[in-house]
Image 1 (cartoon, helix red, strand yellow):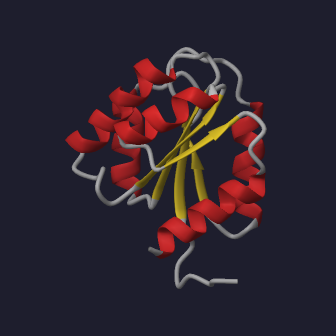
Image 2: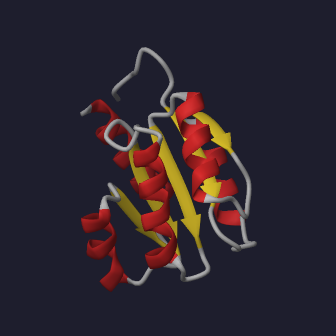
Image 3: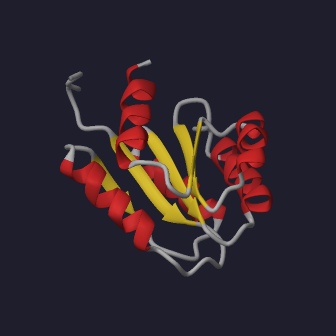
Length: 135
């Protein structure tokens, strides 16, 4: 297993009005148990808040959970906020939640690095993060 000199730092958040956070909390605990440094910002955040926190924390990864179905409207706002903070090119952006399979490629074309619809395993998310940070 690849060991990193410093823990991978991940900012996790719920964007928009989505009020369900059990999945992101389970993910946060799972990644923390693997030695990653997790900052969970909470729910109902604006894209600008997430990007500002990621810049301030010098995050390696930004993870956004969306269960409301508004991913095609909210993700571009997150991407734009990361660009305004001048960190989009250095952070890995992952999105998870209620995302139809036919939207996965569209989100990737927008600039999302990894998309994890409902049912994605914790192992697949962790492996993706580790391999992406290594690159």
